[in-house]
Amino acid sequence: TSVDSIAELDRLIKYLPKVYTINDLPVITKKVTRPPLLHNLSSLQQLANKRYNMSADESLKVAQGLYEKKLITYPRTDSKYISEDIIKIIPKLLAQNISFLPYASQYQYNIDHDYKVLNPNAVNNNKVTDHHAILTTEILPTNLSEVESNIYSLIVERMFEAFHLNHEYTHYAYEMIINNHSFKGTYNQITVP
Image (cartoon, rainbow, N blue to C red; front, side, top):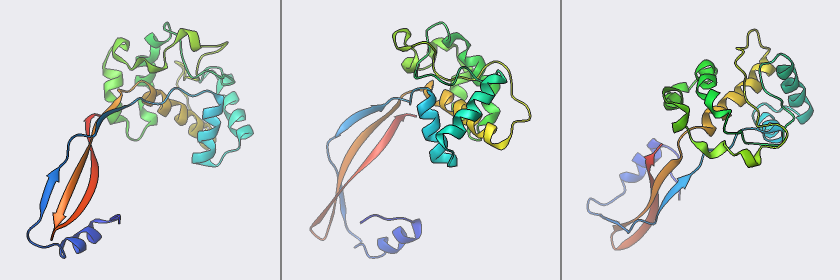
């Protein structure tokens, strides 16, 4: 049974007996989740479709328009990586685009540090084909239409995500004993956001 609200949880707690035991079981695993890679055309189109219900053709046309305005790099790429020489400009690109994210404060780490401490997951010279992953350029956008702003924001968002720290957490298990009945569950404790 899952509990979907605080009110429902409060209602269930009333039925618990006054005496119960909670036993922590051994740590199951320590886990690391890497951030997503940068966008290539396909991943940008998929996310635009999922988030804004845009067709692949429509998102390509918008991205191509942003490219022609010199606001993003070449969009028709199949690479999700950048080369080592490009990472040096990433902190500047992140800093100038922070206003495009409503929750930007959680990514402050990315722009407060030198490029050498950014997550290198998306940096691989060997996986850059004719063109690297889609990035913004040093030119700041002005007067974007709603669909242009949507596509641009998806690119900015992914840039912040791709260079963020790995998400690390410990997965625990517990057992709750009530009236000689055993209830088992699990939870995660974040160690690195």
